[in-house]
Image 1: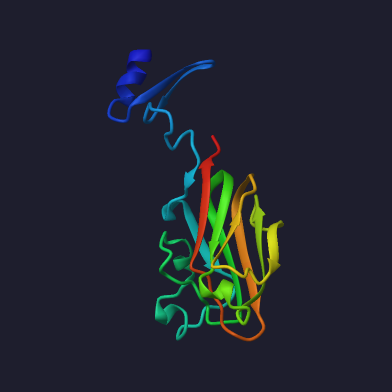
Image 2: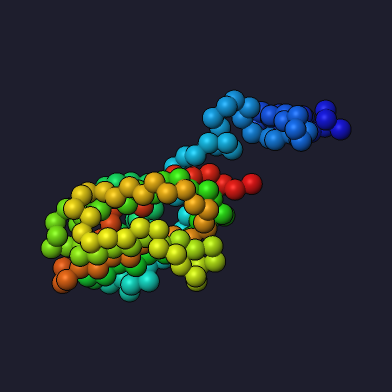
Length: 176
């Protein structure tokens, strides 16, 4: 039986764990994606804007919600409003150890973001506030709280100016 499992894992490598005895297909070196925290890839997340995105100022300018999780700090998600409200759904439940919100100039200039919050949920409807505050006063906000979740929600408000966010970076690992 073990030889059959080893042959099934060929090409991907394998790891044999003696307690409890089991084979795990994947790379066998320490520090693989199976055992370490890493930045979640864009294909492990999806995002929607709960604030209507304007076709002329948001989608038409390449600033749709998908830019929030595209892996680039150069692209902007901005609905063309003084409010942002993005729900990010993770591919599965993850153990998260760090979240970085990249605000760019929207976080530095107090004319833009007046208040913000980051929330988590296991079901996408009951939300718990992870972090919140007034103007970030910085180009990025780092949240170093360990949690298990499958949904994140980023919200921010401005007095009157349109606002956005450049990237929501999530560092975690899948929960087996």
